[in-house]
Amino acid sequence: MTFDFSKYEDELLFVPLGGSNEIGMNLNLYTIGGKWLMVDCGIGFANDYLPGVEVVVPDISFIVERKDDLLGLVLTHAHEDHLGAVPYLWRELECPIYATPFTTSFLKHKISEMGPGKKPKLHELPTGGSVKIGPFGIDLIDLTHSIPEMQAVAITTSAGVVMHTGDWKFDAKPLIGPVSDYDGLKKYGNGNVLAMVCDSTNVFVEGESGSEGEVQIHLSKVISECTQRVVVTTFASNLARVATVIKAAHDAGRMVCLAGRSLHRVVAAARESGYLSNEVEFIDERDIMNIPRPDALILCTGCQGEPRAALTRMAKGEHPNIKLTPGDAVIFSSRKIPGNEMKINWTLNKLVERRVEIISEKEHFIHVSGHPARDELKRMYELVRPRIAVPTHGEARHLHEHAKLARSLGVKETVEAHNGAIIWLAEGEASVIGKVKSGYMAIDGLSLIPSDGDILRTRRKLRDDGALFVSVVLDNKGGLQHPVQLSAPGVLDVKEDAELIEECIAELTHLLEHVKPRSSDEQIKESLRLCLRKLFKKELDKKPVIEVQIARV
Image 1 (cartoon, helix red, strand yellow):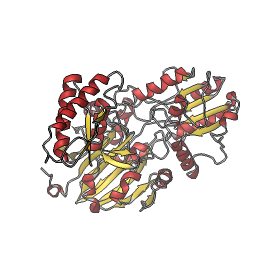
Image 2 (cartoon, rainbow, N blue to C red; image 1 turned 180 degrees about the horizontal axis):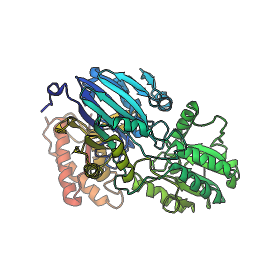
Image 3 (cartoon, rainbow, N blue to C red; image 1 turned 120 degrees about the horizontal axis):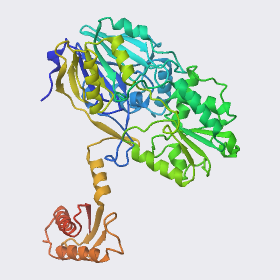
Image 4 (spheres, one colour; image 1 turned 180 degrees about the vertical axis):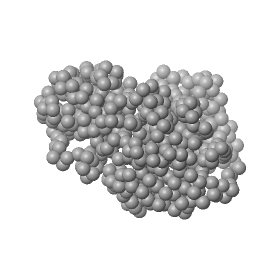
């Protein structure tokens, strides 16, 4: 049953389409007065359920139907899981985009890769700036994170104020950018905040997340103690960590090479925005192998085991310019994102096979999270004092634990969000009151396809059960003109299963010899498919994809 939004036209509703019951792929909608505001538009990592796909984006068909009432998209920061879907989805939305200078610069580099067609109009806002977008008053508030210009979004409406935190932490030594604007948060916290939509990623982590300044000290020490070539992999968008690695390399007398397109993109945006000096020089990856090993440092993508990332190709020995040799050190200045463990472990094993030394956060203090631990969450609630808590940016277990924490801190109402939920933000009545369509779209090469569509469903079946291909040549009366051809990639071995292949061909031949003369090609195909299904179910308990081709002569 379709939800009737007109009944709540004067009420404030929150509708997440991504990032609620998962970590990543954030896309959030607010509506009041028949108008809509979007906050963030990010990508997520695909899992094994989507063969051949690395990245997914939210299904936005719900808001596309209302695009004429979508007044704008506000981006909290420049991480891929908050803005990475813009190049894939914006042409379906065609709304104005609002972002700070660094985020705007970063997005421009991504937009340049969109190819021909209409491009977004970007409205640059200063950090801590304000803008009025229809019935939504927007105030940005500085927060620390692992990338510059992270902005909480205070959304003022006729129904009340929502504090949308985005990703954040409280870091007294952020290295890049200012510390969090505690006064700005407290100003809103004097009884004025109806609801807070807040990050839940590290709700199970006691204490505080740790400071980037401390990481710099330890990472510099680790790099200085390495005797051969050093490779450091981290999240490309963690500009504070990128700057830390560059400084540590220079302190150790090493020249730095960047490997990975996303790293070049973030460095270009940092230079344009003044966060990285133009005087910092990098060695081209085509020349880095000519530098003596003790003098070289390679900063690369691939900390999550992404198949096409620079480190993964190095681990496989397939990188066109960089070859790892025994004694090199690979430093993982990152953590494993849930769901990526198998890919990361595969990369680690390949590196071990190359006799490369692996250094991770397990042995050294070389990574801190960009998300708040419990003590930081407690302080945020003390500052903002919302009447309603809506945990987001987490799996169901994170959201549930966050809601429990909020209640223990005196928040009267909590609502555990999930993608597609329609959440009524009304004091005393906050709740999920309906559901809209949500889900994933898969980025498949240059195409965007449904994650639950026929293409990926067939890929899963091919992966799990293999395929049978049958070719038949008949005359116009249905007589068999050539021997039946059968191949079964992923199902049968030509040598080991020769007897079963002959049996299949014999069964199909027998069936074709008794085909009625007036049978259509489709009728014949279905008879052959049914014959093979029964045979393979009986012999192998498998249900392969079956394709039959008929030629008439």
